[in-house]
Each structure stands twice: as structure tokens, then as C-alpha cells.
Image 1 (cartoon, one colour):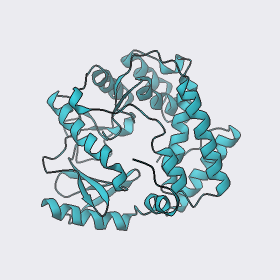
Image 2 (tube, helix red, strand yellow):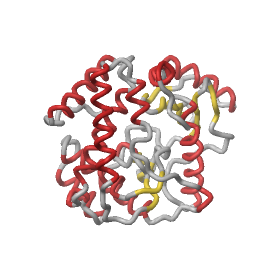
Image 3 (cartoon, one colour):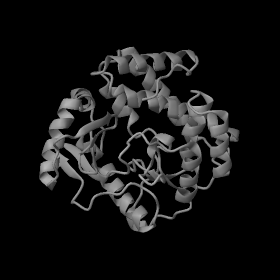
Image 4 (cartoon, helix red, strand yellow):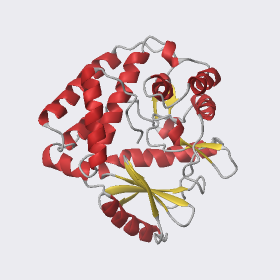
Length: 308
């Protein structure tokens, strides 16, 4: 599907607000027989996520452009369940639903505490198990395309100046060329696509569960290792001991690989474009995006980047 351009892209990138997502939630829940009364907004990023009073989480993607990813994540959830893999489970209701030209999916809540995040050791163990799996051909996982959404995000961020948008476009072009020249050490295979402790939740029994399955693809395993390294190396969000646990349990230190700086820079860039989706309606997010852009321009420290 061709990425939108111009005013359409700008509208699609900025209209997922708490109020508009709540309206979509009510319609979507009523369509599948769920009660939206008392639903809590957990966060808005790539998706708006709500926790219902019932143990159900509703994910609302920004536009219908996410249809392929929504269908994929429901299918991936079914496959992982058939393998006994500890991942979030999709409800058996017909889904995804298209409501207000957005993709809506429904998931069994992992825990009563949505902040019960796992640790780096648990993430590494989950990735070891995941990377050992071979997806069935009928799952038809796509190849990893690191920049699949970034161009659309940049164009949709009309609140940025033309110079800022042009700078980000130039960074994307440079990083794309560098990525295409990488020589990976690990064999390619199934990957989560956004593997970090933020996507590991402990269930009510205390066991770690992998969530957010829309980024699943086939690609270099290093892609699933780089965020934990980046969070330690550039941001200081993990300690040296936490990173040591991660690399020891996984069995590979991605920071020792020659291509690590390229993947590190790509993930940083994608973090900027991801957050740019919130800038139009969130002044604090807008300030954070501009701070991050300045860091990319100057090569300055990332230690003051605020987690989102």
C-alpha cells in the first residue's frame, strides 16, 4: 500500500487523541458485545490502548493503514498460543474490527497491574525461546523493513518546521543506505521487532509474557537485541549488570558486533519519528522531539532523553 502524502497524511498522523480514541472504543466494544463503561486509557503511541473493567485490553491503531499489521498480530498470537509460548492472547471474537477507519483489536489482559514489567533477564529468555521457533509458511510473516513507517510519520508531523522534516528525511536516507550494507552475524529468522522490557509484562502468577505483536517479521536477530543495548549504552536506562544479564542469557553481545552502531542509530532515529506522532497535541512531547532532533544534529548526549 502506498503511503499517503500531503494533508491526508497530516490528518492521519495527528487525530488519535484521548477523546477521539474514546469515541472509537465505545463503538468498537458495542460492536462485539463488550462493555466500555469505566475503561481506562493506558497510553497513546502507535496505538491507543484501553483496559476495560473486564480483563480485556483494546488496541486502537491510528488508521486503516495498519490493517495488515493488525491481522498479522492476531494470527501471530494464535500461532504462539499453539506453540505454548508465553505471549498475549487475542480474544476469539472476530477481529480486527474497522471502526472510524481505525483498526481495533481485543486482547486478554495479562495482569491486573499494567506496570508489572519484566526485566532484562526475562526478556533475554523470552527471545531465546522465540528465536528458536520456525513460523509456519501460512503465517506469511513479512520481511523486516526498519523504515516502513518513518517516512509517513515525518510527513505527517506538520507541526515540525520544513527544515526539521527535511533533516529527518536526510537522516532516514543515510541510515537506509548504511543498513543495506550491514553484514549480520546471527542467522535470520522470526523476530518480535520491538523487543524491550516495556513489552514484557508479568502475569498475575509472576511469569513474564511478551506483548505488542504487531512488529513480528522475519529478519536479523540482532534487531531484537539492539534496544536493550541502546537503553544501557546511550540512555542509561539499564545498568551494566542488567545488560550483562541480558547478553549472557541470550548468548550474544550485540554491542561487540561491528554493525551495532548502525542499528543503534536507526533505533534512535525511529524513536524520534515515533514520538513525533504525539507532538501536534502534546506540548511536552513536542519539546522532547525537538530536543531529540537537536541531539541527532549535534551528536550530543542522549542521557536527558525522557522515556515514553
